[in-house]
Amino acid sequence: MGGGRPAIVLLSGGLDSATTLAVAKSEGYTLHALSFRYGQRHAVELDAARAVARQLGVARHEVVEIDLRSVGGSALTADIPVPMDRSDRQIRTGIPATYVPARNTIFLSFALAWCEVLEAADIFIGVNALDYSGYPDCRPEFIRGFETLANLATRASVEGGLRYQVHAPLIALTKAEIIRKGQELGVDYSLTRSCYAPDESGRACGRCDACRLRLRGFAEAGVPDPGPYQGRS
Amino acid sequence: MGGGRPAIVLLSGGLDSATTLAVAKSEGYTLHALSFRYGQRHAVELDAARAVARQLGVARHEVVEIDLRSVGGSALTADIPVPMDRSDRQIRTGIPATYVPARNTIFLSFALAWCEVLEAADIFIGVNALDYSGYPDCRPEFIRGFETLANLATRASVEGGLRYQVHAPLIALTKAEIIRKGQELGVDYSLTRSCYAPDESGRACGRCDACRLRLRGFAEAGVPDPGPYQGRS
Figure 1 (tube, rainbow over the protein chains, first blue to last red):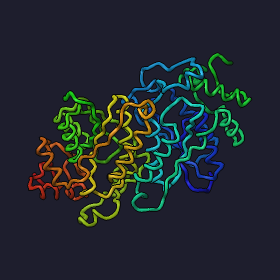
Figure 2: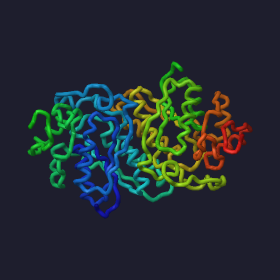
Figure 3: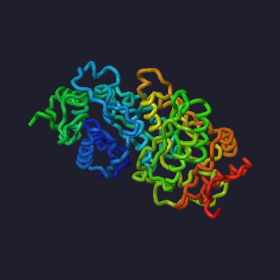
Figure 4: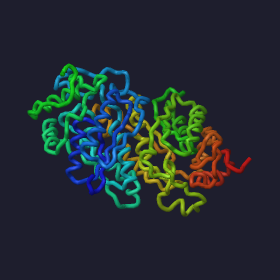
């Protein structure tokens, strides 16, 4: 369970957040994993989050219900098609339809609330600004901005004491580097799910941006992707 | 309905947010009111929010479900007593048990998400840093901090275009000044509910900090409080 200081780790059930959880564990934190059922079409990732949390021995795992469908505006939460079969160049250009408005701001806000209750000062988030989909809330300036806000928003900002830190240990890594790091730290990637458009049994499509970034990462790392894909037996 | 630019207005159903909604209306915005069912013990305020939204003619009113009880840590969301019969000096000292961890950060994050979908640039929030309960997320530096974050977090921060503004038109007013302004703007305060510990029929206790600040505000404004109180017929 870890006897160190508590940390809140945002855990989607994907490759990046699983690796981030392992990094926080390797740094000796007592792990408090936080996931969201937010109306995502790929809610199978929550089963993955539970499995990853168990494998890495978290002290507690909360799944918070929030309804982002009432806001809509994303291919992940509304009736908008998930882009498929895009080239690397297309993935790297612009902000795709899978962007969920203000999602990481919302997720970090809940993490901050839990921090206040636990008297935890550390939040971990698996954002990555290299092999990513151009989401504005994955950039270093956003992470620093939230950290600044956290230290203005909370009880501790008035009463003193805690100084919040938002850790983004993957932010400058390639997907292949993330996978190698996770392997060193004992992440079981067969438990993780990255696909935005899995089938009913949770098998990945292999064609959405998340699958393409993941598959290329495993290829570059020289490691087979243990995740289940449609059409593979 | 207003033909102006859209604005998101956080609407709890209390006196301050009702007045803020009227201010946004007087400035010509098309009103999009946003309320939360977050596990608050005084959920009767949501009926008040609906009545206020109707009276002031909003274009749309969303009530988003989020469960802050899973985080807890507040007299409003957990099994912690609401402080009663505190003096002015006690109300002005420290952060009371009714503080909900990171609540305004969470609420503003959802408002920001809705902004992105509506292409709205303006958020209104009824925080007040004068006659208030010492909550850290009601201070001017917090509001400015969130505005800075909004302009780092979103699609527009990468693609250009919108520049988000967080309006807090009541932040420097006394409760009496807020009430006078609301009366000028046609707010029907009989529809609003401020109490943290209402009875089953929604009548205010008259003893919690929110009631005491409200009652003193009406007294100083020289106006009778039209809200229902326990023990009054």
